[in-house]
Length: 599
Ligand SMILES: Nc1nc2c(ncn2[C@@H]2O[C@H](COP(=O)(O)OP(=O)(O)OP(=O)(O)O)[C@@H](O)[C@H]2O)c(=O)[nH]1
Image (cartoon, rainbow, N blue to C red; front, top):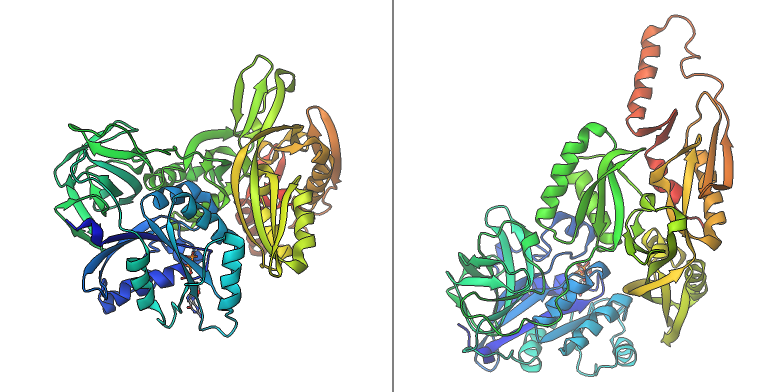
């Protein structure tokens, strides 16, 4: 067991790409935690997709032994936090598990939206914060200006920022010293009953579920009989270890320490981030505050393009859920799309990552329906229902009013793009709450309906600002608005995968845009096809796709049978990506394309 005075627990907060992973790698490397030859760049980002997209999804941790200048060897525990907005709750739990943060800011870029969101979480958790200016090797680095910005925008003292280049290794020893001298040691009572926080968990194909914990009070040992206070489940610990970052078994962990255990836990779902772990026989009196179960906020339907792949899709979803308790699924049948799943996600990025993995790792062709948020239906009889799928919208006469989730969005953007950003937010029913300046950049805060953000807001924001805006949001609550369900009818058949909830004032424009798009996206058939948008029984927009004149084989005159056969085969292959709606075939790509809004 480590002397509590010689422990420092910390996390690194940064905006995406400011160099968090590179710094972590350097710290690990410099302290010889990993032998040089085992050093893979970005040790902490385990998953391929994370590496490819350059984002950190699952929190993880590493324990570093550091001989400090004062002659003592310290144990430094770095908990890596997910950098994306969708995982705000996971970030908040990781923050509770440590006492300090390194605030990494790219000295050539300055403070960004996620820097703010994450540093506020660190401040909320009462962290001691050490500002670290990275990338000072770049000619464009302006450390003095960025220091000022940190003081102006975040309001913390940046005069003693550590200047580093995680790339060249410059300043890394200073970071290690700052961790020891400027961050506080943890506190905890060794003699009190065990109280540990469940910080993270993941599924390992050899070990089963691995649980990352921070001990607050008491001592945990291999073989202990433990209990999770929120779920009530009890387990016997069969392995206790620290991560260096590979697992090294350890006999016990005391207050202030961070480590992992395994205990024959079947699925990640049985472990809840933020839960309190204690001894079954001698439990602690109260659980740690702030526990919140993971709540999916964005839903969409996932259907196999080829109905025969349904079983494969179900198996793949079950496998992914082994490692991700926040991704929910429920079987769904759609008249148009057949059998599939209605899935819930923490946010848009989470949705994209899961869909990508299903398509890539499990080789599935999927139709994704429009992402939707959870609407609250206040029924006339007083009942309040959650609506996860616009297709399930009940008869309007039964509904008194509808509420939708709202967010507080923070956007940082260079001055010259401010006008475009304001217009975009305004177009998405936003209400401006704040507008301030930090140097040549504006910080805008908007109250927006989440429904207007889930689809393509982020893409639009990036395109109108040429990638210079940064964006972050948090859900603030529900508010009533005049929302209606808009259905799309193709050849008089409703296509439920295309129905959306929309504000009444926007319905006409959205409806018109969608039918116009669909007219281009649906190939011509042998007959005329009306395409309509409707609210209830009322058609608000209509286009007609005219009939095709010739069939594809018509130009193969003469008896060229092979050519004809080839053409028909080609057509058949193309059909695999099509869906049949009544007599009409709609290409898979049309579903998402039709919902994109051009502004
Ligand atoms: N020139 C220079 N480039 C750096 C430095 N530190 C990191 N980079 C580069 O900046 C990019 C982003 O670095 P990462 O460490 O992946 O950033 P991150 O903050 O971990 O990003 P996420 O994992 O996406 O949150 C990489 O291409 C790094 O090579 C530095 O000190 N100088």
